[in-house]
Picture 1 (cartoon, rainbow, N blue to C red):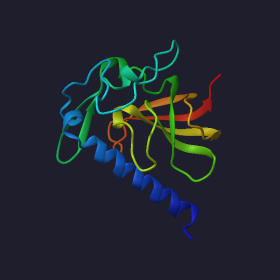
Picture 2: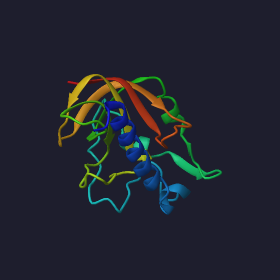
Picture 3: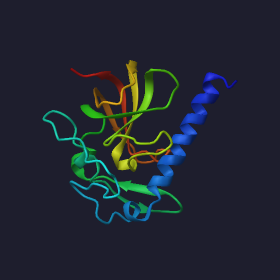
Picture 4: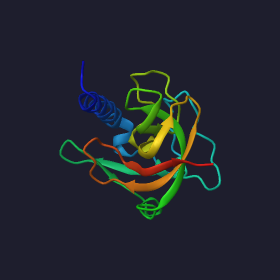
Length: 169
């Protein structure tokens, strides 16, 4: 039986490998076709409907990328950079990184997952979440509020993180 920390490391490694694999698909890496309103045509789901007061997935997906020495480097538009270290509200679908029905560390995605082992979006469509209190896992979209970090050099290849998250009304 693996310890809790070993399970966490294994789940993060799996998530990182999945995110890296998605990030290395040809279209998103080149930045071609990306920009405001970009949606991966391979996804069978439409992105969540835009809501007032909720961070736009269209804005988050407007990041451009380039490859430098086996690494995907994000280039954020000014509107995204301006959100760094700001409190935001985000809505998305939970992807657990821990066992159990309540999560303190998880990913949210702009589209729902259809497979336990598949990442439904690239790094522009995922946000790592660290919550203040456990959030009950659900297949429905969750609305959270927390401090957004725009990541320039994340070891797992993620572009965004929300910390001190709490469920929003």
